[in-house]
Image 1: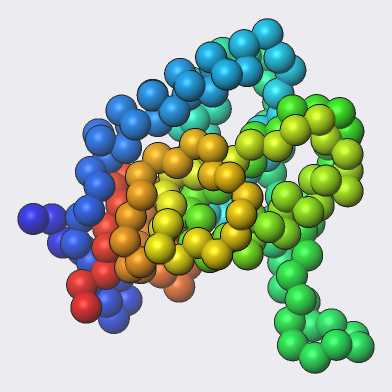
Image 2 (image 1 turned 60 degrees about the vertical axis):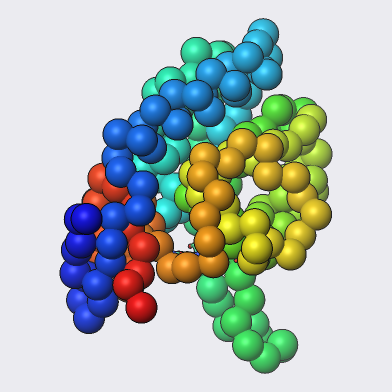
Length: 178
Ligand code: 5GP
């Protein structure tokens, strides 16, 4: 059993890199089939989705573009607490077919925010591709169309996901040893 240490925590390998790679092959095949003949914009959510987005996108054989946005926290001037906004939009996506690429969907708050922003921009339709999905934590109704792996409600790192900024370069997904 492969283990790794990041800062003060220990993690155990949960999904090996070669298994992830094969699963992404299948996800890309599905997307290529579902969007056959269509013009698609992939929208990666930074930072975590950068690796999955790259691996997925290079397997896409459609007429496709890719763009990335980032969720930034800022202190609201009037309201208390931190508010999240999406930064980095530079693509005109009106009337486009959009595939949102997430590293992990947990509660779905992030996804809801992104989908809300896309609807404002009047895209043709939206689907969601995520490498990891925590169905037990999910509280939203937005369909998660392409989910790589359903995982328990535990903290994971690797393949783009971090613990305090570290661990994104791990080629497998690791779960926290409690
Ligand atoms: P949600 O908005 O769906 O609750 O959470 C989405 C974001 O929370 C992800 O994009 C990711 O940044 C973070 N997140 C949720 N679960 C995990 C996890 O197990 N590990 C890591 N590294 N990040 C997570």
